[in-house]
Amino acid sequence: AGTVEYAGLEAPANMNRANMLLKQAQAMLKTPLDSNSNTQWMGFRPSTADSLPIIDRRNSVFLNFGHQHLGLTQAVVSAQIIAALYFGDTAMVDPTAYRLNRFKRKSFK
Image (cartoon, rainbow, N blue to C red; front, top):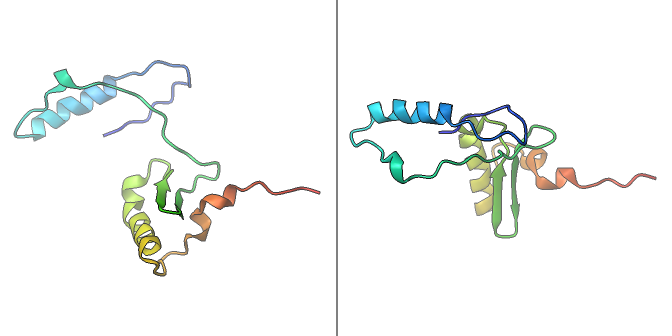
């Protein structure tokens, strides 16, 4: 599980919420997790300037990220678009708005 922390780019990681989630998870599992051998970390989540995800294909690489913390709720449709790209089918949702090239620089005269 992940959480969002709005503390600034230079702030150190605050693991209080992650530790709380671990404690709650332990109660739900038959075999407790061994948290002594893990490494806690913090990283930045990918986001886009227009708040839409990138769902696209570049050669043999499939791109599916930047869902603005809605990845679980958008996972089914994103996966269906990726599957259509993989198999060369027509996606149930037009993927044009989610293509990476929407950020190409436009020339100004």
